[in-house]
Length: 54
Image 1 (cartoon, rainbow, N blue to C red):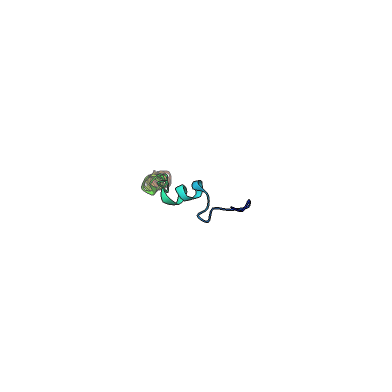
Image 2: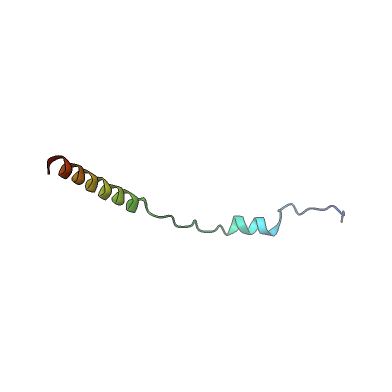
């Protein structure tokens, strides 16, 4: 066998990463962000209305 022989399938770590991909990490739902922004908007509108007409 030649001294500079390389495995045609690549290395074991690369194969394992291909064969057993990690599940993607769960990301925070955007729903919470949207609900929070809506609540802040309603509070700001209510405050502005109260200051303008109160």
